Amino acid sequence: MIHQVSADHEPFKTLTFGPGLNVILADKSRGAGDRQSRNGAGKTSFVELVHFLCGADAKPAGIFRSAALQDWTFTALIDVDESRLSVSRSGSTPSRVYVAGDDTNGPVAPKLQLSLVPDEAPQSAAQQAIPNTQWKDTLGARWFGLPVDDGDDTRKFRPTLRSLFSFVARRQENGSFQDPVKHTPMQPLWVQQVAVSYLIGLDWTISSHFQECRTREKSIKELRKAARSGELGRLLGNVAELRTSLTVAEDRANRLRRQLSNFQVVPQYQELEREASELTGRIEALNVENIIDRDLIREFRASLAKESTPDFQDLAKLYHETGIVLPNLARRRVEEVERFHEAVVENRRSHLDSEIKSAENRIVKRDRLIDELDQRRGQLMSLLESGGALEHYTGLHEELARIEADVEIMRQKRSMIEELDTMKNELNLERARLFQALRDDIHGREEFVREIILTFEALSQSLYERAGSLTISETLNGPLINVHIAADRSKGITNMQIFCFDFMLAEICTRYGRWPGFLIHDSHLFDGVDERQVAKALQLGAQRATSVGFQYIVTLNSDSMPTDGFTDGFDLRDYVVEPRLTDATETGGLFGLRFN
Image 1 (cartoon, one colour):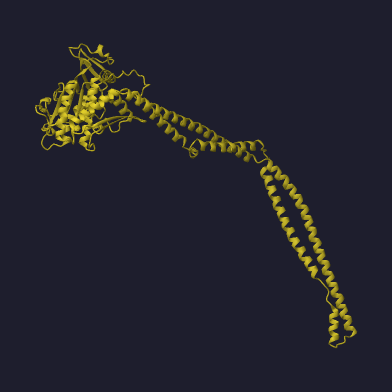
Image 2 (tube, rainbow, N blue to C red):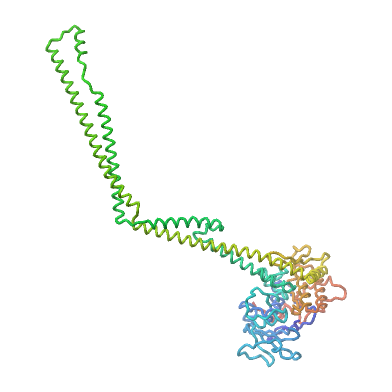
């Protein structure tokens, strides 16, 4: 338990506590808001001070390293095991804690095996300076039975003093009054599972193994994301798709290798290619000329077929029938004209025959030339097809290198994905194994779990007509602890869930030696709670703390101090700690001064 909290500066209000219920009461002046009352009186700061003296990190922005308080040394007289220790700490040297034993129990060093801070002089003959980290190890071991941290990080996800102590004294600034099983809204799941499992007596290593599974799953997701990035990421839908893409790429690479093995670099490849192209053009031009000449031959032969001499017998008959007798001279001239026309026709036929033969000769010559040109072009094309230019050969090599690189990347990614799939399957099996181990653990501790459930039920039934319930379930994501009280959507009901859960932890852990001997609740726990329920909770807290044997410290505002709901003979004023705090004056608060 905590016996006393003090400081080396006179304005500080030294608080002395006894066993059972202790109420730190802050008188709220008329017109003061909630914020003014809290800052002025120091109720919430008292909770922070307890954390500070019990090893909490002293952040640069924290109140104990502020300009107003950093030179102050705060001291608490607390029980650790069977020893009553004086613990001192200052914001100016937050990395060290000064510890001393009382006169009754003798020196503290041999019992706790503390190590002095090098070159650190003790504050007094009985006082020793130790690192804050060692102080946390000591409290963890003596209060909660935690093994002292020996530097072995094989079990990374383990319970710590700070994760467990946060259920002993919930902190408003961390959002501790929102969920019974959490001491901060952003608390990692493993911290919650490991801490609560440890406190209620389950095998916390199972929760630790579940977190290892989640960590590995996160790594697998990141590796999958990395494998899907880049140019080839679209090919990596699954192993089957990648296998197909890899097969196609390997075949293309093999074909390129064969092509390169048969490739011959042809000197002056471009000149040969241009010559072959020119030959093709000349052959095409000669073929066009042949077509023209063949058309001429057809026209000439058609003209020959139409050529004939005039029929002069018809002309003589015409004269005879008209009664005109031609003189011999006229007849002779007609015969001459007839011979003339026959000569003209014969000459035209001879000319057409000559033109036809000339065209045919040109075609023959062109065909002969076409054959020669085509033969040369064939030689060139054969040479070009058997090899290529050096630039082309180099380009093929570069393409092969690119494809081979892609093939290697796909092979590696296929191997990676196959390995990731194997790891995922192994994790699924591991989850199933852990699920069964968790189920066996809960079943194996059936009597202990029954005690937890009934303790919570009894506490909630003392506050409400309908008893609440606490369930412990095994899931594929670890243990699930769920707390329920009827109408739990109400803010006040949620706070009473936290009250019952914390008292269940305090009672169970005290019985089994895993608790520091005190429980602290800030006044924020009772925000929004009906006055009669607050009265029931405070009276229940006083009774259960006394019967189980631990200390219950509560901070309250005087204007929210319940007056109704207590049973006869119970007077809350009997539990108020002196001196009372007030925000009415500058010196009335816990620290005796106000600061930002």
